[in-house]
Image (cartoon, helix red, strand yellow):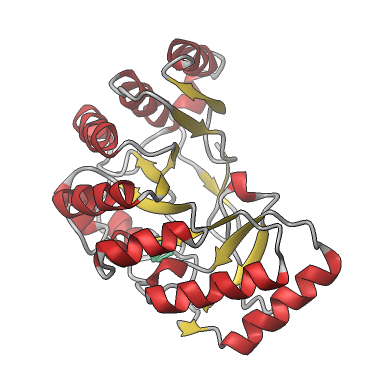
Length: 298
Ligand code: SF4
């Protein structure tokens, strides 16, 4: 398989076939992100994709779900994505779901008609790095869109029949604005109605612009206790009919996973009880990072 450099996928895509269609991220400018910082963005040639599908068919012919790599596979033009879907379905006829990472701007570059055609071609859902519902946070994180744009584009996805999950960065506004950030995040998520919310603490990764902001005192990192408190505040004001709440990444200080609305109180209880199990010294601690900057402990 043609994997270039580090290859990422959400934890809940562990059983999906990973098929690279781009190298790196077409944006690659988010202040907190080190995932593809040293990877030059390139579009994978179709012959590489065809070879990878043929290889996958020889070892995993029963694959039913494909996750397109890398940072924002949805940046590809609709015509290219439709051709990739045709290659996948020809080589792996049991595939029913095609998914991948997407940015808000990737939606904006497609017409409603193209979005509907992609839904019909088997692109069932996309993972969107929404991150925050506050304009100034989106701006200093260099996401390249504001909250109104994100809301508009995510509602277009829904309208076209494309499901999506959203990533929310806990405490991205810092500890002084936990309540405000939690409320703004819940407001936009309640409006756009994702099928899954992936919530995890902010990573201040080595070598990122955010690390420089932290060192210059322009950003204050939250403690473990504050991360948990903001997650509770966010969850409390979520009002969704059918949505997975995924707070079970290795970086989450209290691991919680359930479905809203029925599990809401149980998830809140787990967060409160999980927080109570830590000592005050641990609650006051900042994340410890591994070599790649990933949170490895507290
Ligand atoms: S967070 Fe996503 S969109 Fe931003 S640079 Fe990283 S991979 Fe690209």
